Length: 327
Image (cartoon, rainbow, N blue to C red; front, top):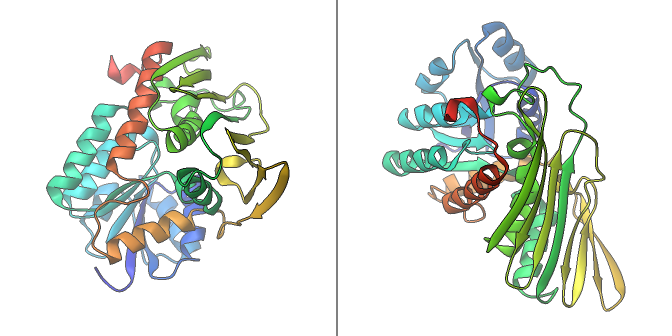
């Protein structure tokens, strides 16, 4: 791997702008190329962020010898196709969450990464948030005792969006679950592991997209209450309750800048601000892995992504969330 890791971006949408801004804050990497189905859009993005190359097709970027790692920021339905094509061209891949739309897609992507001997990671940026990393460490060493209860939600009003846009269109794997429900599910999985039982229910919009999902994850001696929705906003505070104490993640918890721990009736505030918006931390993880020759992250590996999508598949099966291209 070259001393400076050269990044390419597929899909210059809103999240790609945040990613490109944070990439500037990370040593050892540079945005070299951007690709869009519109050359004008790619050129505008490349000019704004100082990328040397702009391509009017995804294929052209993948064929470029000037790119080491591809960040895939397309809609969900493009993740499997373009991640696999990138890896087949020998590129390392950081792919936006969810890694794939269903377990079969993620399995195909992981299989390709192994076959082609390239790096692949799901861009689940919250896993690398300094506060969430610290909380995970504390839970693992038993600072809170036995975890008994977890609550997390993620909701905003999205019914005013374009009904043919990504969020509300089933053909584009729209709805709340894959877009934002993945975050509460991730937190429960990170802290408590795979549940013994899942109870869930959903409500749907006139387009057929799921817009509210409530979930209970049951564990041997714990429960997690989780929710995602597009019908209203929520405070988006998360809490983790153990037999010895509690942790409260401030809103918006998935990108939190700190948390409060309560032990022995004493409150302690922990400020752990992110670098930039927070994407810098997953970029640093990619750089660290490539620098040490690792083809998957120790913090969020292939099996973690497979577990996460299997949980979402189970919720979807219970609630009847099926996308047209899956029928």
